[in-house]
Length: 179
Image (cartoon, rainbow, N blue to C red; front, side, top):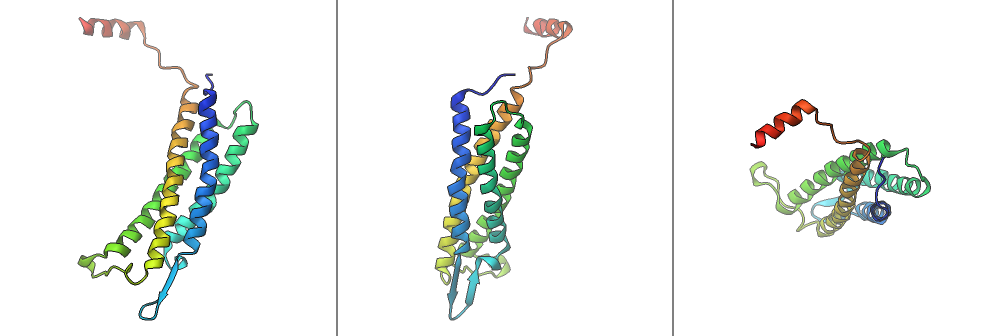
């Protein structure tokens, strides 16, 4: 089994620890996403299911990143390779879905949708939209870290295996194809 180069291991730990401030800041920002007007009333993040999902994913991914970084730093022989691989993939995919849902909502809030008679609302709830955008940007940065982690954990898992061997019969066939 080939181990990862030390600089790649350092990068993995750095990425996992970088996720913490990004997801915590995104969670705090989305919680503060609220606004009100006399004409249209009050809107806050708890009214919007995609923002609740974004908040939930931030609250799940931050502790996972901390625990996985701690395990990675403390374990010499990594017996959790498959666990990291599967959990990194799962968290990355869930973060994609939560950020996509929030991005779609913010797009509709900015642009509206004339086909279904939805007006844009950011001109009325500007504070709501700007806080939502800030939270989404932080979430996307954390997602980028998780995508990199997914690639690193996949590399760690698949480096354990040798490439498939070529039989003598297939090797002869490949050699004759070249002539």
